[in-house]
Length: 291
Length: 183
Image 1 (cartoon, chains in turn yellow, green):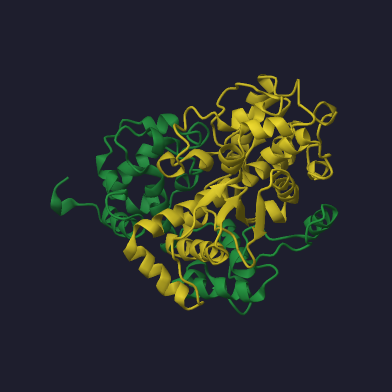
Image 2: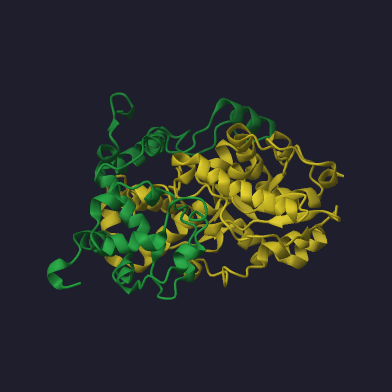
């Protein structure tokens, strides 16, 4: 198994712990990743897609071309990148006229979209290709007694007709992946609600975005969660950095640890918090997770 | 609505929407019967003035300027909850993005968004690397600068070529001499 790792923006440029944890965890299961030299922002589907879809599409297509040249399917660690690249790939594969138009633009930079690869999420690789049984066998430090508020993030599940993970109202794959580490996935109010960051809202209306985030954190706390676990670098930024911004804007202080799934799995596999970049985050990890 | 009163904004939505998403996608806006399930499902609508069904009604009624200049149009996080739940299968989130594209063309783009656009043109990233993160990457045993457009000048030039070709630079008011947006 070999994949082209599409880094995006937030993972490498703000939360490199997600990148380090993902590379370590995949290596532990024999999944090889190669770098996508010269890749750019995906670009963000709700942000760039809201500005100008005519520009969003060729920039996304250029990124897809880099993976096509490598001959590898893409894996992502951000729901935004996943959504953007998968949507662009889908549109270009299914609409010859659109593909022609985009290839006309790409021609000037010596690239051509061929439609030879798929766009996947690291969660899919772990669930479908590595599998729960293999992961369970590899767990060295079961995270017993840890209550997790699972947050899926919107673009991991939706639009469901393109994502193909079943009903977006009743997902279980991330809960199953969390529970295989020995932790417990806790039900909480509005579990499937958005973190608030998407669609350009974080950049334009930060207070609106943070009000979403506050609701999610309060609901997770009320359900007795010890941490939030998710599959998205942008949600990660919104939940972790967001707690600092909530304190500054609203004077409300939380201390809710936030982990990308491969960081949680990394702990269960026996990596220490420094190797996973967890010590670098705004909200520090509690003893319960590190023992 | 009779043919003579057909919404001009609806025509613009259909034209751009069909180009990007193919026919029959944004056209679903005509199936909206104002049931309000989108509004009831909307997490943003709980805390903002965004009323999703009103966005579609204003489009159908050709309330062009009022809709395109509204702040509510930009309170949607594109969470797709309404998209999944619409009983008439209206492709809500696609339609909202198309209306926003039209708003941007009309000059209704927040400076905060123009700054994000400028960062992508300048660096290839909406969130570029900073010194603190370089230090963190070093600690984690990763290359200090990731192998993206941030490390490959030729790759960044390719992205900039695309932006010039589509006219995105002009759309957001990017000045190549200053390498920034003009405010």
